[in-house]
Image (cartoon, rainbow, N blue to C red; front, side):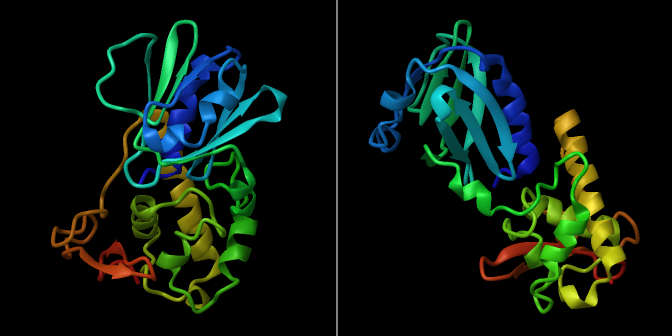
Length: 243
């Protein structure tokens, strides 16, 4: 699933359309039934911003389009009129460029969902105090599971959960009550720094994520993996150096 850094990069790409009146098309039938084209076509795009794992496109007259990419969605920006193969969910055409949304089933003219999000991990600076307070609300919950709860901290997904916990040497299986404030701060700061670097460079560091059975880059112990939480998202960790 695209995480907060992927949405931040998408928001950066879509800035080329900000300030333009856009032509709107919804080729995919599941998007067409939402009648988005009728509401958005010809409106001026005033701004694009990432909010956790969501993308908010703000149009004139207070109209806001929320996009969530789920597991496989992606935004592409290309020259206007480029050859189209397949049926994207949404096309926004400006004077010279067009933004194309592929496989992004969550499209709605409402931003209420983002009001329930916790503080954004990519905020500059991140509100670590509020994030720690949110995580403390359920002290028995495993820290690896809690980090994925967008109501507590927005933007972190399975990749950056694994990398941040490894960086801070904290096991994903420890209960929140067993993790000190200093350790929580270290985990969150690591997530912020790693994801910010990903936004700036377009490269994702993977030292523990999706490396089960391979040697830990710190101590050489084989990385372990197992499903965690109600969603059974796979956790990756070093059993030796992540206490």
